[in-house]
Image 1 (tube, chains in turn purple, brown):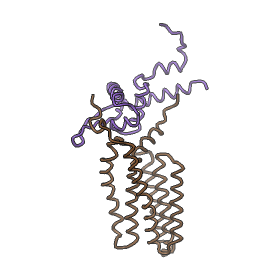
Image 2 (tube, chains in turn red, blue):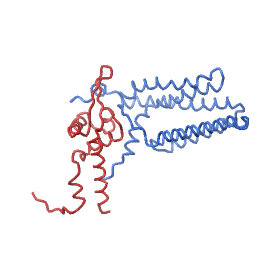
Image 3 (cartoon, chains in turn cyan, purple):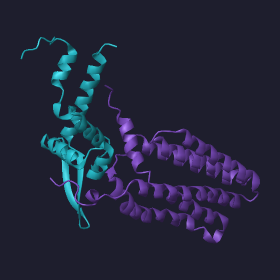
Image 4 (cartoon, helix red, strand yellow):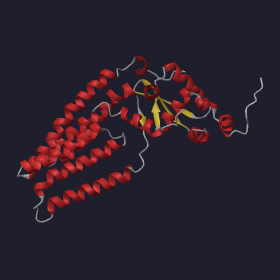
Length: 110
Length: 199
């Protein structure tokens, strides 16, 4: 299928360049919530994003695979505990994503 | 499509950890003990010891709060260090002025001076989470309490002690109610208590 869209349109350009890994709403929520903290555990993220355990787990796997989120497993007493934080790549990718989105929104007509 | 409001996300995230009311209980116990130290010179050491209460409060937080809402570590907010230093300098200067200038002729105003310091500290503490009308009402109540105690008590030691106790008597039950509501609203779920990222 071919498209006849206007490629000179800056909005289209921004959309083409946008990071698809972050752009998915659930992953965007995860990234934004991890961006405002140094680190957080799985329970905290579940509460903040309102995602189910399975959903959060699968999105985190994708973000981890992309190198945006790091996972550290440890034990508190006998209970396993998982801490998550944004990597340097993740932080800069999120900043770039934000800038692009803001620029794109600025370009849109009122 | 709206832009990503990171400040709002951070405020919401910070608010989660103040829902448990433990900080109110801690502040209430702290003020009750400091009040005691003002009421009688024999108890003057209690004021300093009161700060140690933070350790049992932190233990309770680990057992009650984190298993329910999880744990997150926040970076120090921008301007926090500068704000704390500024607040401390203002507080020490104001209280020293009231206590020692003019051979202690202003000592009777100590309760209102302390209530101003309380109000500023409270304002500073909650400004990170966003101001609400309820918070401004509490600030007004603290200042009004300080003014009333200044007028009613001739002995500034007792006046100050009573001011601390009044605030403590308000804070401790408020904290306890918040803690009960928090525990009721946030039960520990089985999946939360065990490994939370089994993949």
